Length: 501
Image (cartoon, rainbow, N blue to C red; front, side, top):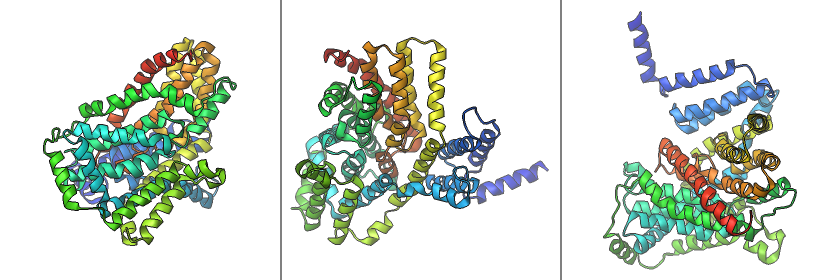
């Protein structure tokens, strides 16, 4: 009997297209959560959606199947269970709702545009330029990418466009120049390190400028409401407050990641001469490279809202519209063709899995799960009898680390930030309210470090294959804590010097 069961288990383990043991664990998690009585304050359907969401995350972590298949599983279960609607048609509409999100299509189009950098050779040329300037050591290239992010941040209100559409293709070209390619199993030479630096510069710069990412103006509005209009973050005030702690994070980040994820190729003494020789061999810019460069320049101007600044609000363009304009220019000029678009698997894979996670996060908010969580947090804090300093720390940490439940910073900030700021304004002495508010403001950017679905930039860089999911999460957790500490220490001292408390 035992041999028969073992033989059947062995057969199914070899035959099925998923990892059987992780699949059984994931199924057990789902059943266990569904058997738990619905918590007070939630409807049964809301709790069922929580179970589906947490099971999906467990399945992704355990790598039951490719992440796109796990995302499709979530779509199928939401549709069949009808937890979000009273009919099958309503449920499938909800399950597919996020695929109309401009944010998701911005990510997809940014990946497609980056293909043009590789095809034209412009990306390789830019990579060689960076190597010629900073390439004597891999860490120098890391600092070069961080500087590039910092320069672009004040003028690029889409962190996805900046980190995923502009800096990431450059990073990939540099990695390719060193023969660091996930397809060849050589990502560890320099690519893993550079991809992590590419990504972790993005949340830092997003926290440094009001115009560095889309939800920051929402943060300004919530801060004003929570403080009864007594504290308002103008562009200058935001930049001034975040300048010193942000620069400290940027200075430390490439060095810390160098220790957490050391590249195999550390010293590159011949890289500068190699880069110069290769650039000379490439000759002057080709026609396609010029089109690619001009397209990028146009997109950067539009992403920076230059027409709006010059001619008024009627000329403002959504970042996704700008991305589609750039892609269309590349296609009609022959810089890339339709086959290039169809064959970019990473873009379409990202569309599926990121879209499903965004959908789950939006539905959790719609069914009141996020509001229930925030109310429970307030009640627990009040009942604990903690002093104001532990209360401030708990609120900041709870807000930041609850981002594990979100696939969008805009959704997270919209759902939870005002509630957390309001609780803080009620429980923290007025003297120390501003530093708390500024820590929450910084946290709204820093929380992007945590996961491979935390913001629009992350799936683009994660999708390039240089960093495994486990490594991404480990480095993200460490960087999040370190950056919060820097803002808590350096930031609070800096805000004291500036006279904000």
